[in-house]
Amino acid sequence: MLCRMPDVLSIVVVETDRERAFMIVDGLREAGDFDIQVISEPSGLARQIQMRDPDVVLIDIANPSRDVLEELTLATGPKERPVAMFVDRSEDGLSAAAVEAGVSAYVVDGLQPARLKPVLDAAIARFRLFQRMRTELAEAKRALEERKVIDRAKGMVMKARGIGEDEAYALLRKAAMDQNKRVADVAQALVTAAGLLA
Image (cartoon, rainbow, N blue to C red; front, side, top):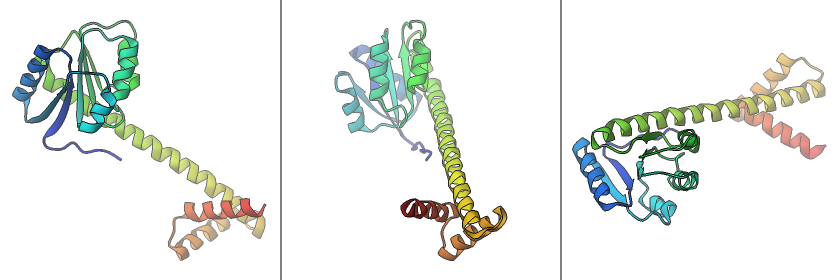
């Protein structure tokens, strides 16, 4: 299910340095109308973010280690919301690890107030793209599983009635219409019942 961003975004800024936090908040206020909250103490980050339930998470960290990156990205629920991470320096492979962990935007060379809005917009767009892709993939997997169940049920009907594939499917479809159900649901019920009787 795709999430829709509200008109006024709530943003959680994770920043331990007070001066940098003020700079980020000021930059965001200049860029638009946002509901901004700052987390200055990253211990218990997952709980803090969950309590605030923001639309977007913005993390500013000087030099993340792989452990810090993993902890931060897991804490922000990257599958639930866009995450933008600003870093001053990055080791080889950290940007790829950040993307794999679900960070929507990973910006090296620090945070500059003028870049906040474009980076947030890019993070949201990228998050929506990946969210759409995850939804489409889940739907494709579900359709494939349903197709397999329908094929099994068709095979069972063909064997039991001594009829062809088209006739077996027509029987499943008629049963589905009579019961006001989907063909996949009728097929699943048939496969489940056959499993109990076997």
